Length: 115
Length: 112
Image (cartoon, rainbow over all chains, first blue to last red; front, side, top):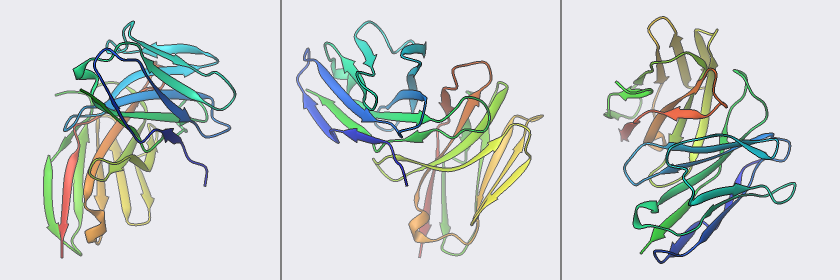
């Protein structure tokens, strides 16, 4: 069964460093998302991406964040200068279509630890 | 209450019993989806119920949706120890880019 994959599973970085989190969505899906979950808290939406552009972003997704789909398979989230408060589990998700019929499928997550 | 709030926050039952979790939300939705998360792990999709559906079944799962009350429930029948996890509802809000808004989750503990 197709699945969303994410690498790395765990990333440790120092404050101020840039990180790139990678995702491979399900191959025929058209809508892509990043979410994050700070330890013990609810899952929060960061950004949605469709047709090679951002379709919606949350207040969390400030100028330090960017997303890219550099080729036909990868979808990346970049944090330019990490802060301690960026420590969280980051989930990528993808969906086949838009509307009420379509499930979002999530990857296993990347645990980002900023020290 | 916030969009997508579950109750109870925690539920402890014995194996074989049924577990019921509730979710409330505030806005119009395209659909509501339930996910399961084992401690510190990924989100596993369980079931989707569309805004024009009232009930849906999948194996031991039964989901109801009441759009007039903006609420949903997830029933797990004949629970097993392996069902121990956190369960989240997530709403696909109408008029957005189909982002999901997650609830606070119910931590289910099933004991032998």
